[in-house]
Image 1 (cartoon, rainbow, N blue to C red):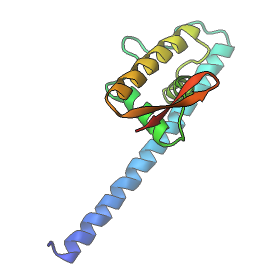
Image 2 (cartoon, rainbow, N blue to C red; image 1 turned 60 degrees about the vertical axis):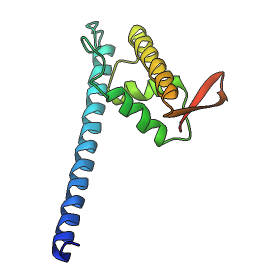
Image 3 (cartoon, one colour; image 1 turned 90 degrees about the vertical axis):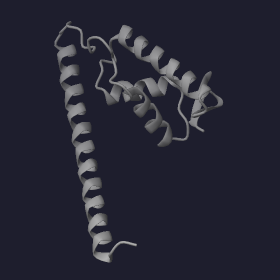
Length: 135
């Protein structure tokens, strides 16, 4: 076994890194909120420029992370709730019906894929929507 001072030093560094990650995640969330506020202000002012991301909507693994994090933190969510969460996380324009549909479709496909792989299980219906939970 390693020396006690090595263990305590590694634990201190581990805790420092956890705090840094937490602080960075907090800053990202605040920045996304700011972006959503500005996007909404532009929409109110009549800006008609597209607000969706060009090309791929999501970075590799981004949709998975958002969906699985949301489901882990809840007692189950349906596809519409998950779509809202994804759009909120990424500060996407929720007033853009085409973009909402595109995200909803991607969330639905992801849910079915994760279910087939055994990551998720289907719960009861809520408001005629299937509730999903982490398996």
